[in-house]
Length: 179
Image 1: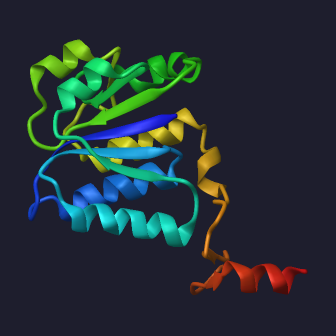
Image 2 (image 1 turned 90 degrees about the horizontal axis):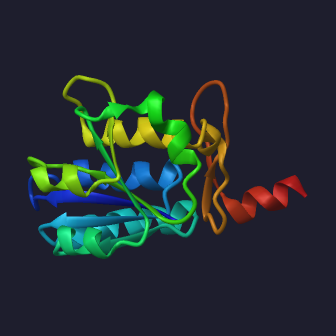
Image 3 (image 1 turned 120 degrees about the horizontal axis):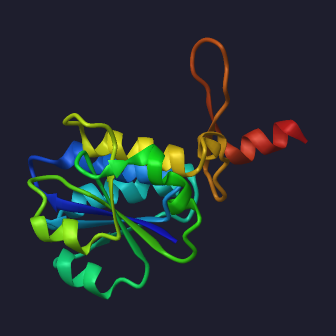
């Protein structure tokens, strides 16, 4: 399982960013996202709604105490930052890890103790950037781009690629036309 731990959600301020962290986590191959900081039912329901309509088994959780969660986590802790080792230097090692992984992304200032708790502090570039971008780049590299064309099971709607315009269909209707 691949979990994403989003630190420090601030209700009213981070709604879109935290929602986008959940959407990127789901679309790019993670199994679940766990939020810390302020409990925000609306934001969590928004991510759950997308997962319900667009498919997959993606889960959304809230955790009040990130440090307690990470201390009891039985897997590898991967912290995305701009201060760690370059992603390209360690991505092959990360791919070889068997068992659960939690990918930690910050929000507000990341506590120094996280850098010590992490098994890997991985730099996604050397410049300030968003946690959404860092998560997308990391997951894309982890899965070698394979997640970008993945079809999600239990989807109710699906995009039909086309050169111009946009087409979204109900999956049952799409399947019956293809039969």
